[in-house]
Amino acid sequence: MAETTTRRTTGTGTRATVDEVMAEIAELEDPRIREVNSRHGDDHGVNLTRLRALAKRVTTQQDLARELWETDDTAARLLAILICRPRAFGRDELDVMLRGARTPKVSDWLVGYVVRKSPHADELRVSWFADPDPAVASAGWALTTDRVAKDPDGLDLSGLLDVVEAEMRDAPDRLQWAMNHCLAQIGISHPEHRARAIAIGERLEVLKDYPTPPGCTSPYAPVWIAELVRRQATA
Image: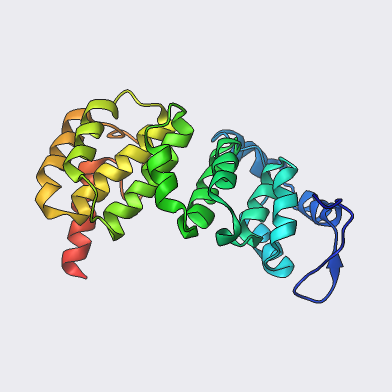
């Protein structure tokens, strides 16, 4: 791996080192943001809008992204995700990255911004789906939910509902959330499975009492399904 003093060209024509980028990230630190994030298991205090602005200025740089990832700093890893080339990562590399992601935000961004765009996405989906690590399994469920919505051919939707019905209530929080999203997506996207998806949600009552701000849709699957179906009908 290159030394962190290696200089790189940014989109503005200036040059920056990994250390300089880390210094810029440090300047974005806000203790109030860190306090809020800590309640959700994330250990950074950076405003994400400002981090995205930094990523836009740095531009896509795969080698720099890899070095930022290796720092193990959460904000640096989020920046790495924003400036990387998703298709440049190998299957095993992505697997190692997910397993070492540590925090929910890094894991979610890695799956959402990198793995989903990778040619290895479906292979990883299958590999992660039943992983004993719930954080890894939740990534498999998230990728499966994408397939449910966009490319369901080949998926056993009834089988997915069987697993949700048997395991979601007692699943760890992150995995439970991912399974619940899949349940709702099946009900939203596939009318032939809608009644069963709603019935499972009503029976399990997962996230039924989740605090939902005014104007937002509850993650409780029966409500979520009904609201999205209503919007589709009136669109």
